[in-house]
Length: 160
Image 1 (cartoon, one colour):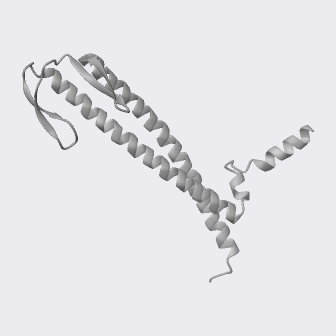
Image 2 (image 1 turned 45 degrees about the vertical axis):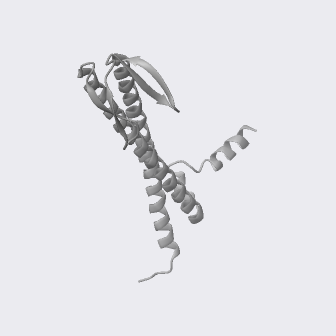
């Protein structure tokens, strides 16, 4: 029984680096397409993380700016990205923090700044991990593409 399991385990393990050369042309095409798709999805995720990090950086800068303004200061308050209304700063010690899905939590200025910094650090950590995964996937796709090209060259009649 143990020899059967060992034999079936080695024949099903086609995902290893040296096993990729043993794949057929169709399988190599499938691997290449799949890894290209995964790399594109990872690139989209990386772009979303970059965008979120930029927004949190801007929020952190806004909190710093807000903490320096005196109470009673007239200012424009953003309701949307393009709609601002006139307002007066009533309390510069407390802020509302958007924690997602329409929920806001009142925090002190220091807690708001800390929240932004923790989120930025988490996003940067996730970015680094995704970048590493995307790099590995891209190298697998590139290897599959190179082997595919070599196999296609071998299979084609001599064009010279």
